[in-house]
Length: 457
Picture 1 (cartoon, rainbow, N blue to C red):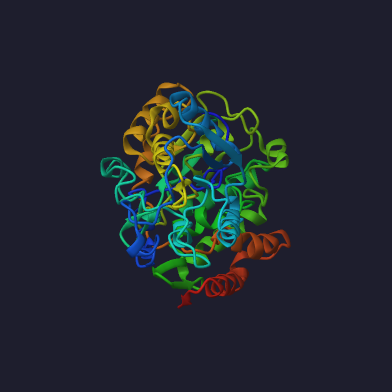
Picture 2: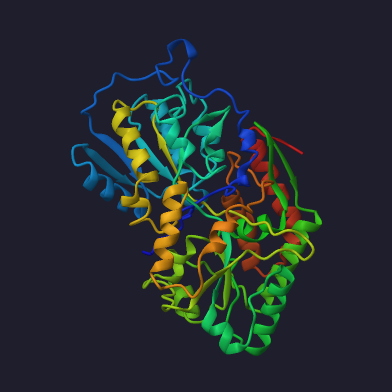
């Protein structure tokens, strides 16, 4: 595996359900109405099309970590001219994708042909008209992408891409959260892999006493709520309709996750430091005992010479912990999505590109660092990773976690990561308890949702 930043967040976003029972309600997005152009002018794919030129160059926007996808496509299809533009991929909820497309809408030109985003909530806006212009995202399920290809994605994984029954994007990878652990260190210290969150907290408390300086997780990244609160069934992001959301951070499910983290933050075993910083690498290389995190952590953090660089035969993966007495559920951190522009002048090439980078072994199996959303590629990816001899365990926990993503956390227009980074991260840095910050978090979510036109319950 190569190193990446989050895909889903290089994300890094990706993403998931069976792996995506996960986004079931997305959605509720499926009531979001109004996708492509006016029906009266719709082309054969369900939206108004620009004059087509099968030889026209296509412009593809990717984050730095998806340049390998472009390289693989160019090698496989040297006859298709591709111009590459790199941008941040809307990482951590920057919203750059939407902002830039709105500028092109106002100008009436400039749209790229294909865009990769680390986020899973972009279909909520990209399927809608903007500034009087037709929706940016092309409808994929009316013939632009073959139905057989769409059917090949892991069941539920295209839910975040589906609005009013139509598919507007393709998932890149699934980002289900699992429990990574260092088998060598656990054995050396005589610790067992925790199977419940109560055992996880107890392990953190024991580590703080017996092996200070070692850690069991982090809270320094904007996807912290997706790792811990989503897995606790905290109703902070329950999208219940096209423009409705239920937010209740005063629940037992939210408070128990916050209380657990308060304990582990205070004793130093879950530091408020991003995993993608030199400080984290310097301070915690060789010191990570266990860490809840998405599937893409394997290549992004552990098997990455520029990050923790965990040695061969040391890294194990276990099922996400359950809350005692409850079935295990887990969260999803990014995974990434590919959109085709409805304004493209070469839809044939754009579709060929999007289909290739999400389904072809040349990229998804041989190059991609994350667990593919396309089922056939995912099977091959798992076998390849297991055959490498790098891991201390098999990777079946990743496969199983893909079926355990809780469907009460939706994909609205607003970014939970951006809200968390602005509201909660500074509070943690200031020494405040997460339990005490929960009302502030709820208010921030409510305010942002209302700005985006949601009715908040």
